Figure 1 (cartoon, rainbow, N blue to C red):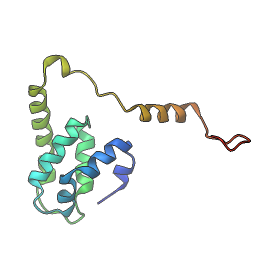
Figure 2: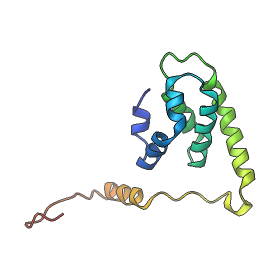
Figure 3: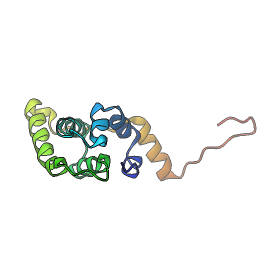
Figure 4: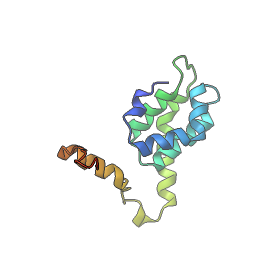
Length: 124
């Protein structure tokens, strides 16, 4: 498994992948179809792009994986998007999922060049 792909994801996305029961099954490389469908469904629900899902799935597979699940991922994505869109009321389909407040705050701090410091009383 290549952890670099997942290290670059926001913390909430990484937590979702780690908590998924399907992640371990995919990483073993055996019986990947059903866990793969579940994993893709979860990532579509989390708002991942198709390329993020495809790349993430590929990184979970062992280096010597010889099955055909990787070729099925694009169809699983299409199916999950279609089923999830059909199950939502029309007005909810277009609403983007807002990022967590902590993620927005951290991004803003980095963009603005904020630095943590201690004053004379050792307070942050």
